[in-house]
Length: 277
Image (tube, rainbow, N blue to C red; front, side, top):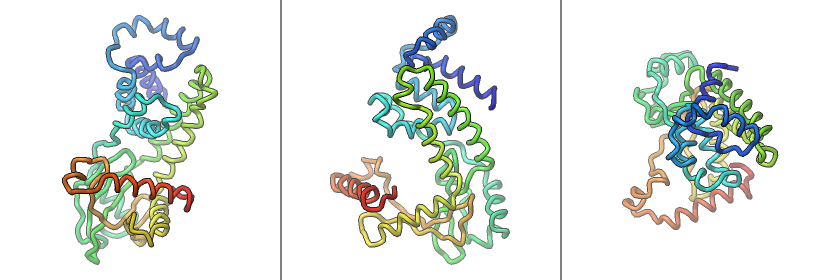
């Protein structure tokens, strides 16, 4: 375990008074010991905002964990779930030189032999991977997802810390046995592990496409398997409007109630018909 990283987490917990979330005799003793430090920390910010800012301070993996928690409204109060939903998993992109090396190492060929064009600036950059637009030698426009270098090692270390913190929390928190934070972290760990193998993600995408191939409700981009690798995923480039961008949807005269009904139908089809979501 990274001891320095652990103590940094403790510092963030103290700084943002996250100990107040846990009603426990052990925590009250710790609060008393930390009182000289805590009196200098801001207390006018709501608990939900403090938690969101703390997770942002701890970096991408903790941001992703907060995003996952925001969907667990069976576990969290509404104010906290709503605030965590604001977390944005966006980090600075890694350099194109590294992208080029990852791709050429995977293919064993110069990048120019695989792509007619390759945009050096990513269209999106997150904690695990980033996405570039490109054009295959066949002329097909694609989106290329590339894993961050050394991301597996970094994620593994952070997950170990999360599991350790969850185990302590489950032991000292009066609601620990009921809410079982260790199981929540295990669920997050399994989900994150699946994101670290882009061949697996490509398989999931293809599976989803097969499930909806005869339905007009959902169009799933094609996966170009000849170009896929554990660290690289190449799929059809598609244009659209994020469902969260309500203003753009209205501007383009999208029937929002119909969109919502279609979204529910798609979700129920995935869950109850296909058992794959």
